[in-house]
Length: 322
Image 1: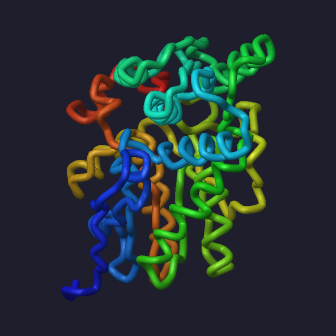
Image 2: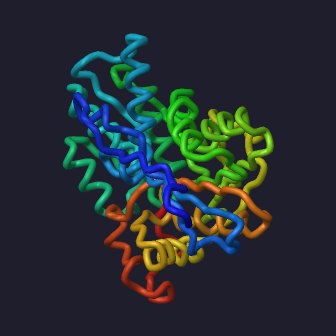
Image 3: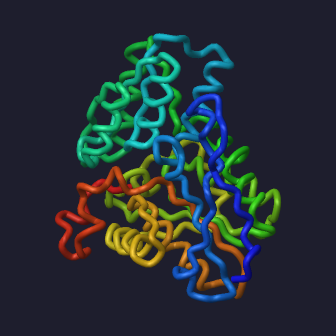
């Protein structure tokens, strides 16, 4: 690569507070993961946000809108279903702004996520692990219906979720690349794909928007299979050009490839997205493929995916990774 090809915009700077430091994350080329030299593959490193995930963008956007609309006041309790990252982001913001936080999440998530929630002062209510994030949504909705004092941003139905990407993440990508031929992200709440997809297609209607989706019944923390029965209200399937299913096994293998071949320490859902990005890159003759890495790997260390061979990981197909 010729020096000067990359526009280096460090994500550092001077900010009034930690919330202002959200966003402006690095876009890094991962050349070793591209099957063709004519196709450049880029990773958007969302683990560089303050609490280590893309959900900082979403949490800030939802709370900013709630405050602007007078829906929440200091001392009130925020209630939110989460597989971890959104709850952690909301908990940090709640502590910073003077709200209480109650997170509903599956009881089979990695312990690091529960520890981070507690560290930020959140109260945790556990839902049934086998039901995954759908179970957390069900329980949180029941709790909100029974107690009107809660404010629930409800990331699955809140338009500020995709708008955080439409007005933020996608704009940052377009500032760095002249063209985006394909964008790949995990299918979770749908916010990342909807917001980036709409903005990138406005710039170039030919940009392919591709979802990485877990196989039905496999719990990968943060992502969901639409075949499991719950389609978040913010999802518009017409924005997607393709959905590609990924197994837990392939997610772990590609998480390890990111670490070993590119030095990128990422959460397991990033492996699922990288797998799909590589597949899409193999179908193109040239161009840029961008995939989003939702978080870093700190919350998943206890799973052993970074130090063990994939065949040595216990209960691989039943762990809640995404």
